[in-house]
Image (cartoon, rainbow, N blue to C red; front, side):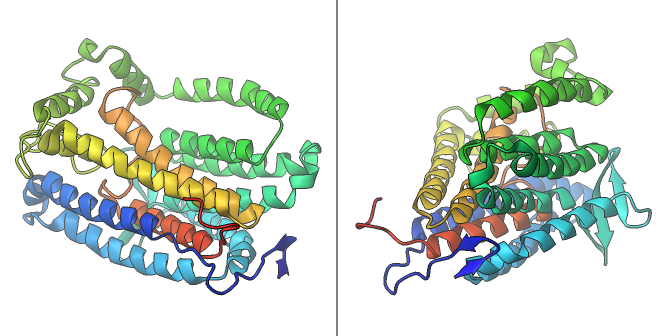
Length: 382
């Protein structure tokens, strides 16, 4: 079957390979995430809302919605997914713009990252993550024979990624804008874009990124807190120091499930960006290694799906989706461990935030879809 320049081969009966290992890792990560979130959030929820279940209840609701959406997108024929890419990009772009509309866009902590509709908030930049991956897979697979013509093959996706990254940056979300660009470059690389074009992009993007990083005081403070946490231990360096202390308190075996002390107010955003610090304190080094191993297992299965995919679109799609979830996890873990400056990038499956959970589960559903449409030539390769 051919659509939009792609050829989708019908999977022969009995050769479809739904990746149940991937599904198992998603189920385990989702369950562990909800349990960790409850432990990390019940004190804060009790103080703010007089309801210890406030954050976890909302997360469960979004998880159910996300699982339903994941099931639906896992069953849609891939040619329909390819056909829907232009509409997905347009809808994502419109949602991004709505953050700047008074009465719809909501400003929180000085950032316009959310839209508020029918009593619920949503973060459009989370929808942009799968949308950008889908678009790049769609366009670069069509342009595989034109990669030596940068005006027709490289410039259009660069412009689209730049528009999305620019809008996210205008929302005062430099970290997500950087993340979008980083994942896009990974997809460009795996799509065999020539090295000289990477060098040309780097000469433009890197200086611009440094300038944007240094133009906001809170970003400079985060950078200084990373480089010298003790310079302002009660201010910009406090979160980094508290996060490291929580991990240190966990030791090898941890303090025990639900027995973290840092979640009682001494670690800011313990239910959100720094939820992994609470997990490390309660489950110790063993728990940290276990969660990292599950994320790596997820990544292995995701990249294996990309390798086994029957066409370039499916392969690039699976690679980009896997990379998006894995890179988010690695960035968040690096922040919690004090290896990179604080970014505000959530930990997939764990951090409080319905938009992130919904986006993550939809990406997982698309990965299952690609695995379902794949066949194994010459037997099972793993």
